[in-house]
Structure formats: structure tokens, C-alpha cells
Image 1 (spheres, rainbow, N blue to C red):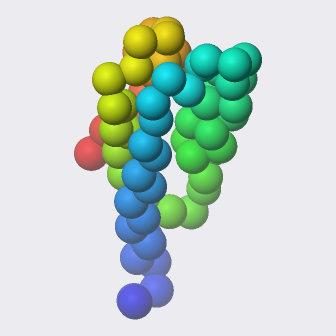
Image 2 (cartoon, one colour; image 1 turned 180 degrees about the vertical axis):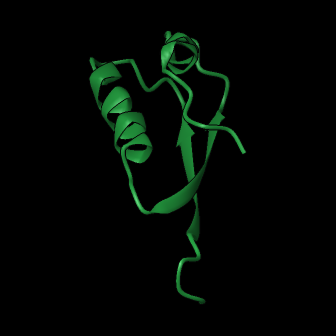
Length: 68
């Protein structure tokens, strides 16, 4: 890799009813942690397997990072 080039990383997070059992804060922390990474170009793909517990609402409520 040439000096000055950014490392590209793809993170795939698979969720299904991630809020059930009080785990909503863990999902928020996961998403925030990925967004907080520096020095790399991140593509974050989130796959929701049809959650019925409010997971989608958490995902929609998270601020989106820069889109490229």
C-alpha cells in the first residue's frame, strides 16, 4: 500500500431482535464503536433478519457517518 492511502474495511453486523432482553444499549455501542474508528475508510453493512422488537428503530435513529 502506498503511503497516504487509506485502508478500506468492510464491517458486517448481523442483527435479529437485538433489543430483546435489554440488549439495545449493546447494539448502540456496537454501531457507535464502528463509527468512531479513525484512520480507515469504513463501509458498515447492517443486515437485519426481520426483527420485531424495535431493532429497526434503533438502527434508523443512529446518525449516519459520511457516505462515499
